[in-house]
Figure 1 (tube, rainbow, N blue to C red):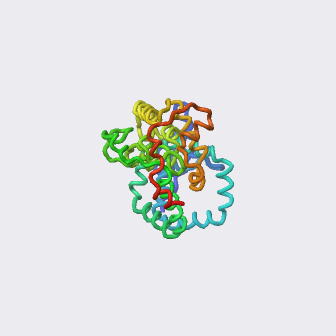
Figure 2 (figure 1 turned 120 degrees about the vertical axis):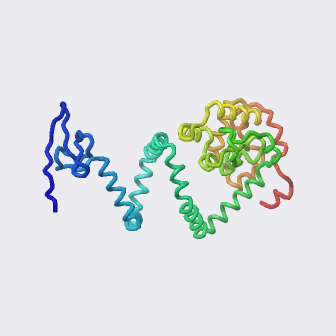
Figure 3 (figure 1 turned 135 degrees about the horizontal axis):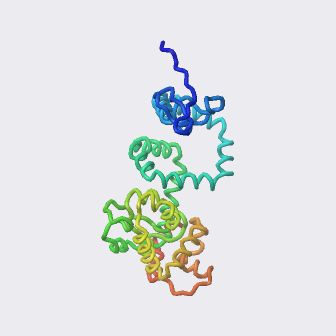
Length: 296
């Protein structure tokens, strides 16, 4: 067995450092992580070597580490929940900053683990049939109770409104989950598939602000989209922004939509003291008598 070399602190060109016990390179102390009791108060291996060793260990012991982490979380779930609740804003901000610095990480991770994500989703659906049924029931009910103007699809022919690409999904600018908006000509927009998945049921203004750099989106395209949505809803851009935030802050359940079947813009204008008229498509807000009976 080779005798381990004795490492000492050295000063080179006014910089204090030492050799890494793994790669043998001399580096300043800043190249080593902190360690109480270590030479110079640092680890013996440099940051790069320590990271490589950790990655190798995790790859070779993935199953054991995952099981250990699951067990620890199950035994200490209350602590995790409490910490998350007490530090929610801090955690969200840290995640936002990480996404900005590493814009491709989530997309690459999802793509390289697609089968795993799909299997987890299938497993969750199998184990939560009651929740799945409730979600589907609520979505169908909202679609029936909210307006449905299918010919709005013909208004867009240039692909994704934010990128111009052709791989698009139809997105509700104001999500159905808010109980507002609906499948109307003033609420349906084509988004690139990954953008649609990322936006999900988020506020479109907040989502764009948080993800513009991550997806390298055009501010000019977004501004044109908002101007179009505002015009389609007979609103100014400032009014449309206010309306979107109001919808997210005043979500409605299916029974609330049944009790008050006025269009959301009418409810918002009345609550905010705004002047009318309403956009023309609100006349087709209720699909037909049979639709209303189906969710009654």
